[in-house]
Image (cartoon, rainbow, N blue to C red):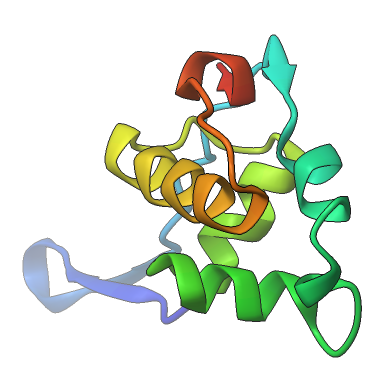
Length: 102
């Protein structure tokens, strides 16, 4: 981070460091079935499965990785995209509340 320079009175300078704001801790999800359901899909067993699944679902690989690890409260639209792809690949209907509950 770049230090910020403040001009003081009488032409004196002082250097003040910017302090980053810490991220708010996210509690672990109540239910996260995404890793179990992903393991059932043979299309995503090898060669970067998380990245390919995220691309196929239309979300970023970073977001999908955080959802898998339970480190974020995902947007509802992202969860709908994930559930839609899981339904398509598994061939059955899934309720988003049965897949992930923050």
